Amino acid sequence: MFGRGSKIYSILFLKCPRCHKGEFLEANPYNLGNFNKVKEKCPKCELKYSLEPSFYYGSMYVSYGVGIAISVAVYILIRLLNLDVTPMIIFVSIVTTLFVLMPYIGAISKSIWANFFFNYDESVSKQITPKSNK
Image: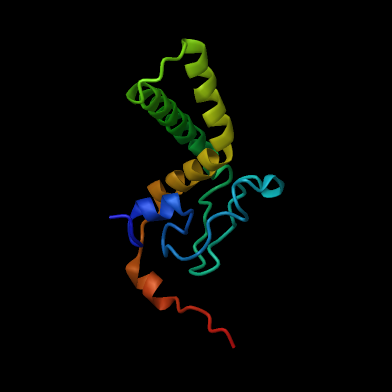
């Protein structure tokens, strides 16, 4: 379910939507020098990641949904742990969590957006051979 070949694998590990082997981003989401910069194409299967200029603007809508889901998860977690906290502490907890996860939320949102448009192709993935260390 979460292995190579599933969209969840591509999304969570920020891999190419088609081959699941190439990196999706230029650098780690927390590298602020290349903040969530998507590569032009997959280094393994040569898939062009952007279908048109401003292709990833739609990922802002996905980012909103992911942020809401994380906010709800933090709230439910606080309630499940029976923490006796004020609404202000709950608010600060949610805002802090969103702030800390902001780079990863942005990266995952772009990956989700790309996975709407590109599908895994097992035949392409099998053609890619690992580089030998000689």
